[in-house]
Length: 312
Image 1 (tube, rainbow, N blue to C red):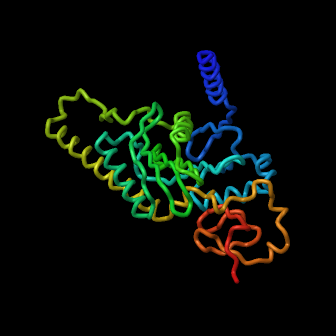
Image 2: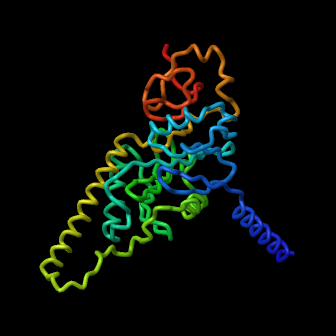
Image 3: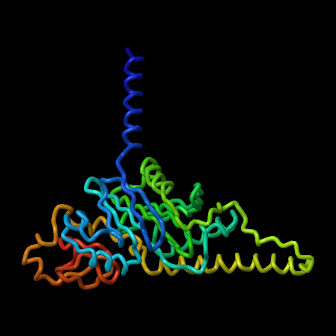
């Protein structure tokens, strides 16, 4: 009898895995970053590229212009959340003078990860883990951290086509579990970098070879020293960019927070006249928010009028 129960239980686990693997997804193309990402269909997804007649906009009473302006102010290109869980997914980016993260060797990647970890800690975050992750698409610095105001998050940091791109997954009510980390990692593994260089972190970038007899050993040594200098300068630029990114506020990376989530079933048109007449402030940065605001115009946080502070 125990053997039968074991077989049934194993079958159930297998079927659950199959259903999970075959969950319906939709592909979202981020034109400014030239990347595509697949997300489960139970996520409400906002992007700068979304159709102005999107049912998601209609559901929440937003306009495309307002969403685009709000995302732009926060350096965000995608924000997504679900009804059923306290999880958000965000993609943020800034330009940098480095072409691709693949220019770094293993030691330099470790140094970069260490610098990012220190930057997060300096910004008041509790860093639980920070490591290098390599898949067939790119290389990432993966940081698991706890934000005292906004909860737990898993951040994938990479550089592609002169853009720092950060994919941040927030789980507000609990630490990122191993199963959720695997789920988030599977999303990262499915990302398509349409402008990807095609090099992995362990592949070196070599200068074009020449057969000219005029090229001297001295010139070769000069090129080698120049290449090493370029890498060192690149590390400094990246660390500086990370510091600027963190200094501007980690909440810029994630506009959807536990304390600021909207009522998923309430559109803007349902806000009462009483609420509209109150003076309110963003709980994240203290900026004044008008009754019609969906996002904070200063820090990009998605605000909930019921959870923001009232001026007495």
